[in-house]
Figure 1 (cartoon, one colour):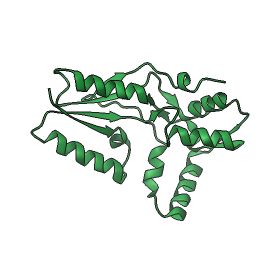
Figure 2: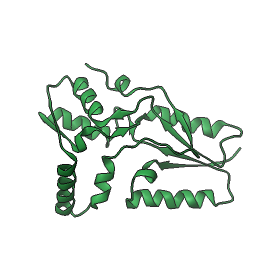
Figure 3: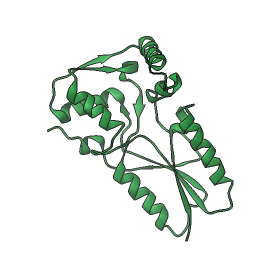
Length: 188
């Protein structure tokens, strides 16, 4: 069976960025089309060789003795392993029916606070690091100042990075996979 699988992002729930809006617009076009379709909304994806997200955090932990953690690190993510996303997309592509006209969200087995992610990366690299939790008001002020200085990023885009990202969409099929963050970044 032929079907169009559109890879989207769960940022459509949490962000007002241009990127999130472009994904919302594209999802609408796909859903209103006459083709057979499935939409996969990916949360934050992790894997040892990614070039952003956790890779950037990993480099931060490797290089700096003090790790600032915006918004006290209390916001929660449901990161999913890249191979689990691939398995999810492949299963949709090979199903004979049941997933067309459906939105699914592959998530990992854990709901992790951002601080827990940083702590795991510190253990993984075997480094002694000091975590500096930054209070909410100061986090917002620093992000706003950074955004104005950099000029290339709108303030809401960066703030949206540091939000709870736990999907509660009751219309989407949430599929929980089993690869834990610590399995890919185990303590050395």
